[in-house]
Image (tube, rainbow, N blue to C red):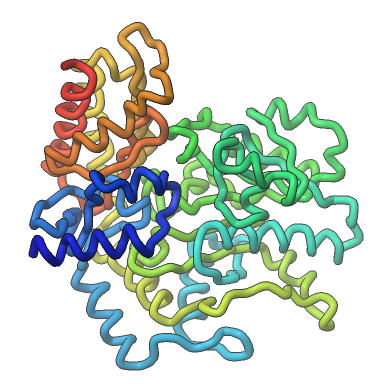
Length: 430
């Protein structure tokens, strides 16, 4: 096994290019990448047989755990039918079923039309292009700008990147994308001039993920919805991370009874099994694209509405019902809160804990509240140390992000927090 592991690592270093990665460090001779080869439930296993809790749900995608028997069986059954068919000029039964299921979460509203793509960035890209084309075809050609929020993250395709508020990711590319203005609050949005040029406002509801898990004030989303409706501005909600039970409800916007004009979904849509994304929009927006060829929405991907992905998504929703997932999450959230309170009380370097449902950010600072120098990379060191106690997760700067599969148990939550505590002690207290 050791020989095979060495070969895997050699091939990776020679041929692969990893996302958000300092490749010079990754390919350094002394670096031994962790090679993950197996998963079951919330656990992952590496090439040497070590087991870890998947503390960031494989980059915020996994919902019901790895190798879930229902998801596995559904995908095997679908493989016996067909793995992929084009959605350009053809349809298949599962796409309509899934679109109907998504619409069912917003009964009595016109948020009923789904456009499928394959990841969070393209779900956002789709909404932006739809929003602009809608204006061009509806007598408002001057509405071509967007408003986003400071320090936001909405994806890496060029249009989505133009919304990005994290300079390290986006400053090189922002001038090539859509015209975007940034605000930090609804009050700042109210004060912007020329709001009649704005096509849409984009936000992650309740909590910003990549912004070190910062929470929005309670009621802010409802206030934003009221203002955008009054101004004739479309509200685009990025629920790529917050969707599918992460915040305690199926979608975060439901907690403030907000129905957007565009709802962007991905990550957990298939339970974390396959790439699939969806952009939901209102029927009245969809109707502006009817008619001749000049009104068609010329956008799409080869794997749009992939049948395997649709099968997995429908099975995931069935698991939510059969396993009472949201009810379990309602029990897990206070247990997690209690554990986080103990963690914060036991470590002087835990400066702040931010929690929205099962989404957690644990920000580390110096004993007097001073930020660490970025060059120290404390967050990275703590996450690396946590592996010794059986936890895999990643930081955003010096904020440790904990966002496990929703199938996690009370005991496994305790193990996650203990691993983080042990890692903080190793890196900062010693």
